[in-house]
Image 1 (cartoon, rainbow, N blue to C red):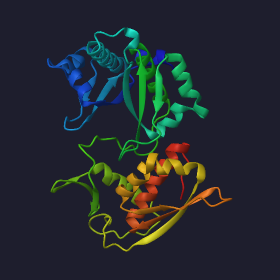
Image 2 (tube, rainbow, N blue to C red; image 1 turned 90 degrees about the horizontal axis):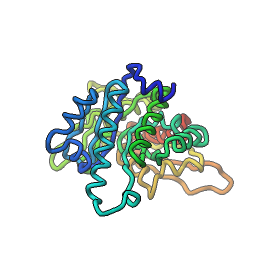
Image 3 (cartoon, helix red, strand yellow; image 1 turned 180 degrees about the horizontal axis):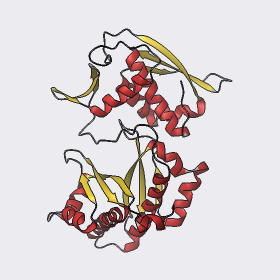
Image 4 (tube, rainbow, N blue to C red; image 1 turned 135 degrees about the vertical axis):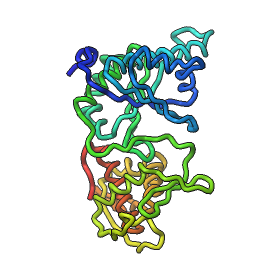
Length: 316
């Protein structure tokens, strides 16, 4: 399949998710209902996530020709904003239009290609700058792809990315990224995940889903009651589990300045210790301590990180 096929439409239905800052979304919605005009002119379904977060998600869905029409209108609007905010500057000194696509982590391997050959080909043929994030977006199995360049380059680049995504469908369950108003502690009770906001516990169905996935892949016998499975309960019996992770992959578990390992600790409720490197060994020892449920969830999250890094390798 090539971009010509996608342009012709063939009535392929696509969904594109864009991650934007509130200010950018404000200009797309517009004072005179420009997003309504975009919907009518393009024929695409355009959904904009709620506005109480610094980040917003714009979802475009529909036949390929409608989506790219809406997409081109959004890009033009972003470029217009850059031009109007820099009226005194020359075209050469203006920053490029930049946007972020959200893509299931399981499709990123196909997008990057062996040794980075696919992404290099997309960069060279479209003239756009393309960067695939190494880390998944918080509490999700999606990664952000940042694209920058002139409008025509970006549109061509997104078309080529969509071709790859249509050829390589996502594997397993995709947990979509949802921007949060602010980071809140996560608790599990009665098999449900909640974030604490002020005095309230807000149910988090996606985190609950993550937890259930971990339970299904668990090596531990779980007690099933009428709640479905036990929560990450402080009174649950504490146990430990050890696993070995290759030295060259430990960085993707730790993340920049420990951000990833801290996120896994917070989401799972488990304590995770990574041993210092041992001379002559190609692996690092990781010890996970907590209830059986929290160990399972931590293991699952570590495996998700490993498989997104290696394109399918997991660790038991």
